[in-house]
Image (cartoon, rainbow, N blue to C red; front, side):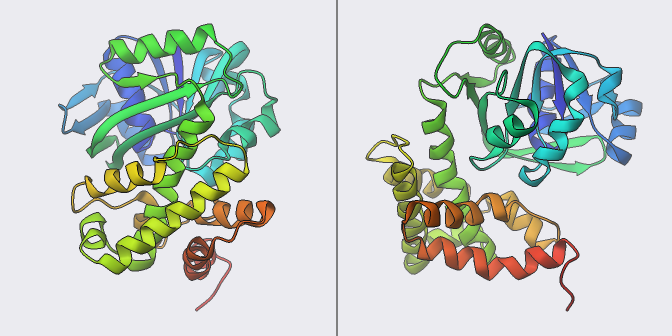
Length: 311
């Protein structure tokens, strides 16, 4: 398959790298020092599952140099999706599928608002990975997993081909029966864990060691679950219990990217995680006090990181 990775960060670099390693025709869209390093020395991936290098790697900052592809993996941050959608146009043919891999549940709608609904799938991934240096992706932990599918449940031949490509690459991949449920199951985890970790500046192990904080995590998840059900997303009855257990099983030092961005003074996905829970809770008339606390506690730092607040 011809696959473009738009945004070669930790997520896009890892999953696109595995496809390229397996022989797929992968193009990496990147910029700056990261792009130059990939062009000169290849895309290097250090992984707990085995290191590898894609060299030479097909890398550019200009999607127009790539032409149309079968699939686009969108690996930018959630707040960059709308801008990326416009820049993706040269990659899109009549049947191209676009797979957003952002944290949150808004990315598909953001893409569709710019590109139309045709070819825009729901998508998500699970991995702990980051750009450790220009041209270098570090997979820190969590078994890599990727899922995607049509939002209305229809089959899509290119989605099936992409699924097969990931399986050949040794990546655990799935087209779930209901991608909306899968998206919200991840959102249940990432929004609650990110909000609490960012507020406390604590990794998973420290949260688990404090019963009061652990109960706050559960309450945040219960609020998100209630919002999902109000939006007619059929999350299973045990979704919160399973998600709590998942966080409990994380390596003690695990931290979400939102927390790392906020600590580093960078723009984060706050508006698409805690902020999205607050917005959707208000729309549905569902109280979300814990997530509201997370959001407004972190908002001044987010505004400052975006250059809109002094002091």
